[in-house]
Image (cartoon, rainbow, N blue to C red; front, side, top):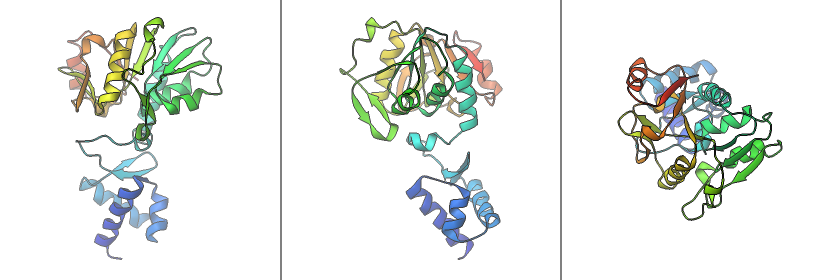
Length: 252
């Protein structure tokens, strides 16, 4: 198989499977790891694919949202450090909200030993992670969004106003000083707006690649966001711009 044909086949495989490991590609194409790595390096330079933790995927369109399964592997190390930093702000006895998303999901791994903790969530993966812990779990009712493994709600939200949500940990696909936080899905955005209004403190957990983007649906301006926790790869220009706001920027 010629290099051009092989690289076309890699694109076709990733279109179907979304994310693949290098070992899977070598097996599919019956070539050496060195050959696959040369192809991957070329396709990466061409902007067609993206290297992620443990494998590769197609470059995400700027007009759409990748699935949570894809995002679980993307920027994984950064998301884990962000989640660990978020857990430092969660105390025994808190009632917190954990949003649906690949970054906020990681928070669940670091809070299992907390005492008398109540977690409200719209995330099925968060529920699965905490189901065997001693944490009190409340999941919102509504429509299941399969590609995000989340539950979104309009009138389905039960009476959250009776709950004392001390801290909400929210995801975002876009963050700018001018427009605040944004996301791709209207239903997710509406749920987040409701939670933000009901919470005493609001934390946005997002890796540094989300900064400088204003995507489809606006969620909230920065004046409603108390903290943004991100990784230490954030460009210094963003760090400087946030000094002019009341939102505290925390690098993990």
